[in-house]
Image (cartoon, rainbow, N blue to C red; front, side, top):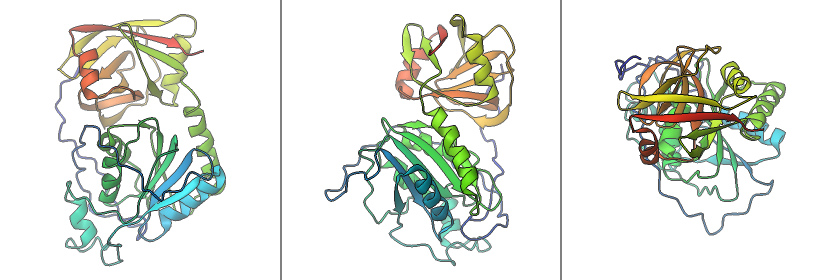
Length: 331
């Protein structure tokens, strides 16, 4: 099993802000992904109750592109729509990536930058949040970090989406999930500003299946943990493998950050370079399952993420010499 050799992995995903230009901006190294749960923010006294049940579309949009996509998602889902408003609105000059002294460039190159939010945003009453933002210089705007670090997403399924001229969502959704430290975060999706309602509806249907209930149950020794499983070929093969009887995997600690064990046969794989966080469940080399209580950078196939335990609890569960991992059909 490889050791942690790529801790300074560069994610070459830089792009100009989607709301400004489709041209590529200079690639930037993503900010380190922090851990830890945020403090809960009390709702505003005048916050109105949800008008369309328990689904919210929440977005930040500097010049309207992301907001346009958010409005389509809200219309298709019948959800509430709220916009994150910057206390100091962004101008076209602020978003000029050709000038390294502009406001957005300086913020994106300053990992600790936290632009202030002007409006009150409460998540009370929602159990699903579609969270939208543009991609700026390969990352989510820093105001998104302001948001997720100051809200409690416990009990909420968060579905990120972004807009950009060409660059993918990269690891921006994973970074926000780690900064939030709470909630059940699905993998995000990138859209162009001109995305069709048909394409969005297909994606909404896919995420609906992902949030419709756990297809499998995972136990660490005798403790059941909640996992948000990916919707991919590897997970479907794993589900088939444990359909008749539970799959029991004896794992061993490795590197001070993971438990790894053989599942006895190879599964389909779609490896990609990633930096894992505590709670990630991945497939390594096609035939080994890995549960992380720390972090590592390598090529894996993502299987899911444990959502109901924090980093300290995961270290207590997984930090021993070895554990027994049992995966059973949720049917």
